Image 1: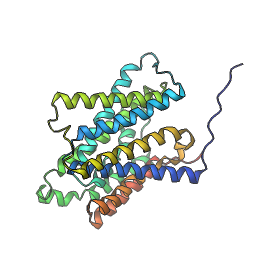
Image 2: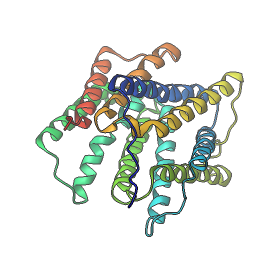
Image 3: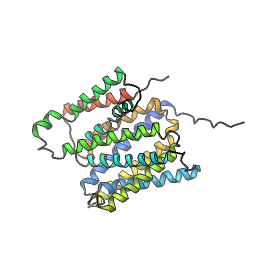
Image 4: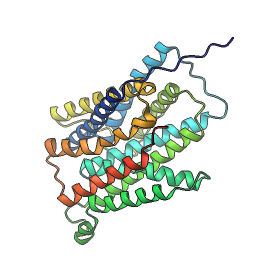
Amino acid sequence: MAVVAASPTLFPRKLAVALLALLACSFAGNHIAARIAFDDDTGVLLAILCRSGITLLALASLVAWQRQPLALPPGTRRWQLLLGLLIATQSLCLYSAVARIPVALALLVGNTFPMLLALLSWALGGPRPTGRTLLFMGLILCGLVLALDVPARLADRGDSNPHWGLGVSLAFGAACVFACALWITDHKLAAVRGPVRSLLTLLVVFVSMLVAGFSGVMPAGLSLPASGNGWMALASLVVLYGVAFTLLFVCVPRLNMAHNAPVMNIEPIATLLLGWALLDQHLSPWQLLGGAVVVCGIVLLTYRRPS
């Protein structure tokens, strides 16, 4: 008789929510540390290389300890490679956006991926978005117009921040790429075990950053920090991201993500507070209102009623 593995016991909901909120704050801190490192001349490729490398070592140790086989099901290798390349692109775009515009704005734009995923799924033969979904998408777009202060930006034609347009475009590109990555994960790699998928994805990211760095595609991509503050920020982003990613990887079977995942959307709020406290990045009252609208729209869009 076959033995069925018991499902892991779920954490109490208060503990799960608190843990997810802590992880979201850790991811937010990772982006704040990245901005500090970039302001100290640290290369974007170097930051992603260090971040993915350390996390890769941690996940490899866990997978080896759990004795997870690395063999992929037939027909999934090219999709796994594509997933890794997409995540590498998403990381590069988002960090490049963080280096150019206020971190909270980059995260707000980057976190629109649930809306893009719903549209992508529909375009590729999935169910048509419901009226509720379309309503929340419109709410998110209205919030973005306020958060990005689009009328004022168009009026000054980017004179106050010449990198604003590029930064917003990079953040939106990161959201688009991440939506594609999630679609591939759900539709093409569902048969691949989560630990193996995460490990191989990080491996592709790490190798991609190495190739990009030594090929000269980004001449300053592997630049070292100019001072001790930059080195400290680089170390902080590696630790914050590595610990959060690994902890999420270990605990996700017990977090009831179907019901609790919207808690992770406090990341832009945490980023806003940390950006104000550590980077002196201020947003106008209208931008704050727009950011709140975006976060509420994303939470409502991703929330699933308990069955």
